[in-house]
Length: 452
Ligand SMILES: [Fe+2]
Ligand SMILES: [Fe+2]
Image (tube, rainbow, N blue to C red; front, side, top):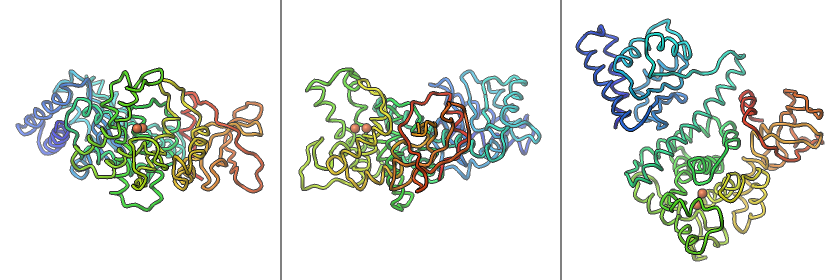
């Protein structure tokens, strides 16, 4: 594959320049191969990038798991400079790559932004690097780093899904390995950073039927499954089930999918085909487990067996299909749709609560709300004291009484720090409702410590 070839050539260039002078035939050959590999990646794209998420290397969002140990050297070099992302743009010259290879390992060269400037100064304009934010106290920087990491995890996930969806739409081959690499990255993300990931998910603006929906349903299904003590492989299968649940929609014409008004009977008939179509598509991806296949087929069948496709009562639904169904309905309500605005989290939670026992499995609804809470993590909420706060943790068993951090007093003055556990016995304050969040607020959240 093109990305693999590029990383190998990058590594080979680094190695040979470590042994020989840049004019040595071995280096010249390595540089040549590197330039060709880059050209291959830029053939049908304006740019591509290498990213570091934790200890993992990603290219255009696709994690390169198989090669972790081989590419450790590249990860280490980027890490040392705090470079999280290195972007290569179209019209990149072979000379620029050569300079990069020579400059990157040099002791004393600057980190992130400085390195970027350094590259520019020597005429490298088609390669740019991004760095981690600094200049804060260590604890805060750590917190911000957490947030950045989760955000990067989320963004990489989106890109990888877009790539997969693109292949399906073009009727090209999807590699099961790409799906499972992505799924495994999400498993790690959830294990290490669940609260922050949930916050990002909650605050993201969403459109239905897009990569966001696939990723969110995957994460919201994993959150339900994460307490089941599943091994990593099974949890990755759960992630894949969420990621691929609506794959069949890629075969539904856009006019039907994005129609503003209600669907007519023929269109509705078509729409109801997407679970079956999705299951068939998944069947054609080698290496994706049965769980994804089953969940795609069953995710619109309700607990009482209403919904679609039609189902005999005697045939029970898979419990992971029921989890995907909960995640799906919740996320759809939280998304902007062609015929409806996004709904506040407490309303989406209310729909689950009301449907528990008929549409949804009541135990699973309770578990979902234990994790996600009535108001979602990271939501800005008004308290009945008149203060404004951010939800920073949920209390299992009492989803409507989260832990909050007050950010504005009753007079509307900004304050920081005070945490209230609204579930505590001696606390009389409670959350009234969630408030719409604007973009500028996101930056303030980077410093919030999510967790009880
Ligand atoms: Fe669906
Ligand atoms: Fe869906």
